[in-house]
Length: 455
Image (cartoon, rainbow, N blue to C red):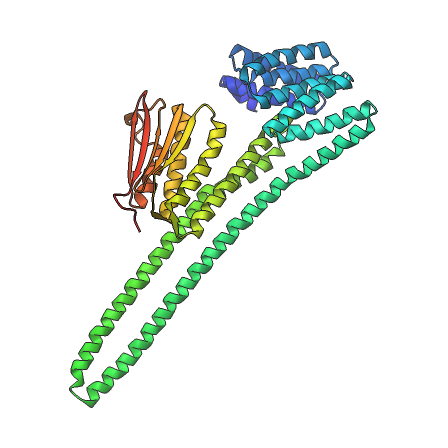
């Protein structure tokens, strides 16, 4: 059905992917000739349209097909061409994958010594890039090669390494379960606090009711006993009304605070943690339907990194929820931790943090909104602006994030979601928000809160 739709509507990019996947399904079913046919069609489309990222995948699949047909020379030709593309990419992860494919062909040729050389090279790069599935695969294949060459000691050694590594991968699922339990625990803790606040309000209402009853009896006794009590009665009535108004005001204020706090916590947990856990779970479920081992490997690697990011965001959320106030010095430390992964992932961009704070306190809501805004600004700059320099400056009354990227015209993007979210977060806490950008010179985001730190 997908092929028919793609061919009917001339969806070139889609056809390339579908043919590739369809060929892999045939290979898994043992129909190598059909697999070769569709992998060839996928490669042809990639080549004609210069889909440089897709070409090596198609070539590697063709190499596997030819190797299964015992056409090893042809398989090596496919791998040589794929290697030429991979060298241009300068990507250790993809190169590790190609080394493993070449080792597979030598393995099929029963040249186990040559296969060992390439599996060892692939394993080294896979460990360097944390390519978990490839690490597990190479360990298993190296053990098989040693078994084939009658080196039982080394075969057993690598088999044990493969088992230990498999156990470590399974710990990812345990980490996800722990994160879910942590979210449930925090939500239950906040619900308990809300219930206690409600009990306090109910106690105040009961106290007010008892006071009303006593006042009523007193007023009736005073009216019957002596006319002089009229003055006292008027005074008590006025006092009672004032007390009722204060109680109503306090009740309204408390309920409003509870409501806002509950919404803030729910939004932060749902937006930043709940949605990411849902994505992880659904992605793990979808892996059962993938037949392409290479794609499974890539997806698992992505999920591993994504899960670690989710755990970091959960810790950031717990940090802001647990603290009623956050010193600026601690806030600067959290920002320094935030930018570390960006420095690793974007080595071509110099990212700096400068703090000139001497004192000051942020509330938890102010801290989390400023933190998320800094995070969004960094993401936008690195994703769209292509800067060589990105600077974050935190003072006693402002935060500035500036880059020397390509800039943009705000008139052409007046309602961008990311910009709106940043502005809304800052306005919610009563701070000022300003964004300036000049094409060719860069962009600056500034958050301010006057001349004094709010208490």
